[in-house]
Image 1 (tube, helix red, strand yellow):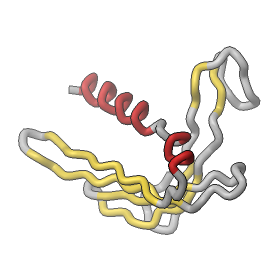
Image 2: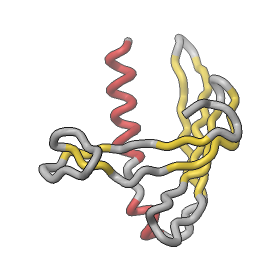
Image 3: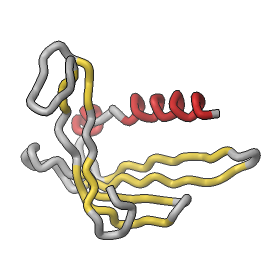
Image 4: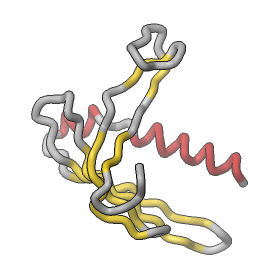
Length: 112
């Protein structure tokens, strides 16, 4: 992803699994690749992008925004704001953000 408005973005998510799919590493399975377009980018403040899954019929165009705010002592507050989900079932199926945010915390704590 090149962080500029109008540029494409695409994420690859892997999960551990004994069954492999083409393109996955040893013991990992590829989840569907979300992709979209960057619609807002303010360095060190915010990035927003559309979130689409072309391989899932009727998947709505959603938007994911990350807002950053610097606070005291070299710390940052992060707000993750997914929007556009229209059905409760779809929200439950996309609860992976909790996992990834926890992984981000672990990563950041190791860097201190």
